Length: 416
Ligand code: FAD
Ligand code: PYC
Image (cartoon, rainbow, N blue to C red; front, side, top):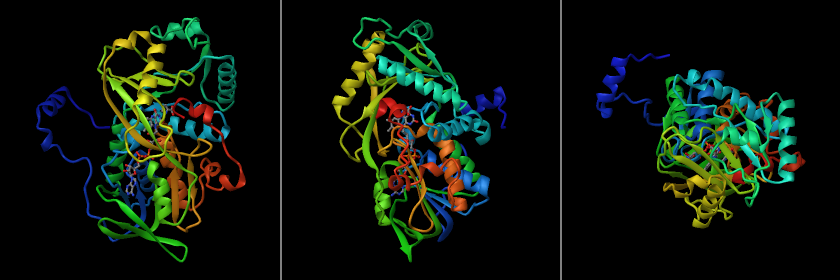
């Protein structure tokens, strides 16, 4: 671990940032790679890192059409938790949560993982039955979870409106104390720097426009900078995954939707946890800078524009003001959207494909940030061995033929 003295910190603070050394190289593409990872979001960068670190595969390129972390990774609201209902999903997300707990040390980069806890509020008897069932299932899987009553919630979140006469009274909540948030950019930068140090080529501003397939096997990709050969191509392109699959003649059961978020002006610390509510359809946390970080559901139409409709913003703010009347006079600073790739069962696809050497990791929808380390770890393993990692096996494309779906709409929650 690199150490900074007080003098060192002061020297950096007063230095000109344009003189700082680059955190990773910007190489030109080589003519051929063992593995090309398409998509330089957190999942793609983590995949490249674990390919190099865990499997010794270092002739790897990450091709990113924009800039690293500029997709959903840099647009998400960073909620991390593992309280999913079904064993397959719970075990995958819990694996990721355990990796989060050591990630800053692993990458020697502070990803600002903050285990401030996550609350999922219940507003009806059916909500509470679902919450109790999910917490019980979580505990059977060794995942922390507690069911709290309104008095216990109020004690932990003093600003929350727990009045039993409100439109959607809070009847209780699930609480996962180990859940929390992290700094999204730092996750991308940490993986990028660590992958680069292991020899991975990170190539930005290079869009993949075609996938070349010969005799049923992938041979490389067409890009704006020409053809680049590869033995294996691993696509991790979130909302663009349907388009990518189409380049190889495949169809995925993915729909792409805008998902919005917004942040307020910075406030003094007033909310030290994460609060989500399916019924009023909003969620909120406070960033380390002091902004309230707010979001809600997807915009219902399909689209690729990284913005959303005003009606969703209005609905979200109504929900937040209902939960936290004290925030009704806070001004909002910025709003944006990302394009999320939703699957019919609200679970990801981590899979080989019918094309030899072509793999997809997508369908994380509204909830993939929390899985970034786990997703990269198990996908790298799947690509390296051309065989699904045990945690990835249930998430193969085959489930849409076999019918072995894993319905996580309840746990995906607020944003679906
Ligand atoms: P991305 O970060 O989108 O990376 C994919 C990359 O592929 C992009 O950089 C893109 O430019 C690149 N690409 C696409 N096509 C091509 C091409 N043809 N050639 C080259 N590059 C290409 N998840 C949570 O767990 N918790 C949350 O609180 C949360 N909140 C969210 C809030 C919002 C507003 C949004 C939009 C999403 C949220 N998510 C959340 C979901 C989460 O952001 C995503 O599931 C996750 O970040 C996906 O990571 P990724 O690396 O797969 O995708
Ligand atoms: O998956 O926890 C989540 C989430 C919250 C907001 C968007 N996604």
